[in-house]
Length: 316
Length: 295
Image (cartoon, rainbow over all chains, first blue to last red; front, top):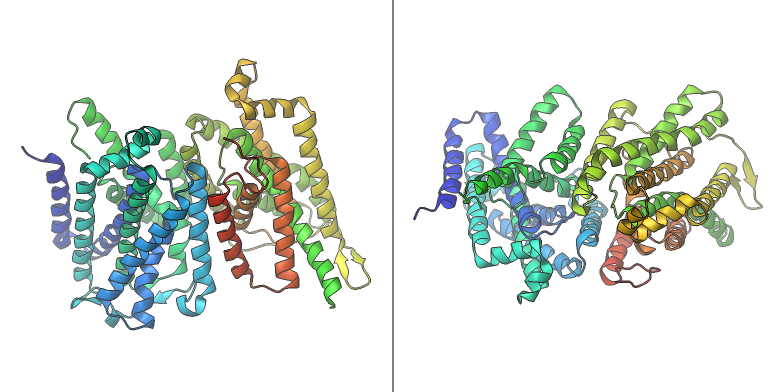
């Protein structure tokens, strides 16, 4: 039996690997950034797309990873590898802590509570400006950005490292959503009461999903700090909670490759739009409104629906 | 200044903040209470009101009073019109589904911000107050305009209360809030009620902004603070209860005045504490401090 889902995702990774030699320098860097941000979007998708938790505070987990890596690196002289791990742990722990509190609420309250926690963290970053450098941000010097002997400030190394992280995240996500636990996550999204009746505890399932989502976001944040050498308060603001939602909606919520597709499309849409007009906020706003109005399932969601009608359901 | 007069000044400043906040938050509370819509773009309606007030003030640079009176009429009407359009063209077509409307109003937030940035520019711009006189107290002089803001907000809030509690329109709105299906069965045009509610909510934010803009300058990013504070007030007061909203606005406004004027707290630190506190209230007392515990 051929596993078409696995093959198609491996195919995507192969194309991205080939792109390493084919892309011109500007797009090479851009795609590396998209790959890292896609990991963040995949984390958001685990919470929102699969488990149905609409969070407006994911920038908290991303920023925890970002500063969790950047501050030990610049202030306390940790090595790149340990700083990366610290960022990962920071993102995961932050998600678990927020989940313990915020998951007592649901729906609109959950959204507002996560928004407020993220806002409090953003303000804390500004308040502790002596260490975090606030709006100006921490610039990580090139010699510090080494992990296990690889120099992540080098463009080629950075692309391959980003692709490695992306590949791990993608395959883990694919494995997860096809495992029994992934099905339970979807059950929480579709009908929490029915899932509870079947003997699953919604709180623990959602907490586990949110923590995993925090791990993805923290990993993306830590990788961002090391690869692009910058950690600033603007990356912790509300906008960075909304962007992953936009990417996920565009690519297709509840699909494994959707977050990457959405992130890639949005990145180039803004890139081209900014050449024509300075109204980039308008692009984001119109995209959000148009998506909920006309394409609530996103690109891959619509594709899955069509394939499903023909009886060929294989796009997880 | 001695502590007594300083406290009086802090209370005055706090009441001004509370008055403006109450108007804005009542608008948010109405849309949430009646339509169950979380309007993330509410702060941008506030911002649009302020920006439009600046444009109106540019038509009559020599007659600030006339410009102010015109702005008090034009700005809420225009903003309410924009809101009604947004409701009919977008929110209604989403069937007011909570998650979809949140995403859509986030989209609107960016569209309004960009519109203000493109047509109004990135700079903060002042609007002249309609009149200049100082009320001379024994210890300090106080701006007469600020006292007028308190008075005007009080009158407007009273009008809103009369509208909801004493008129047929208010009755229809309350009926829709309690049960929209039954209301429809009794021949109430729920779509029109929703459009009107969304318009009134946005108009209240706009009129609050017209009042505040001679004190605080107009800026395209000024919507963030009123949005967050209104959320805080509406949640503390119990989602969808007008009286709770008013009490909470007074509480937050006075607290803000006291902390920033009398005790010189760093504002960022106060904001962090307030934000965390409200998040925890929502976690442990989801019905708000003054709300009734309901199913």
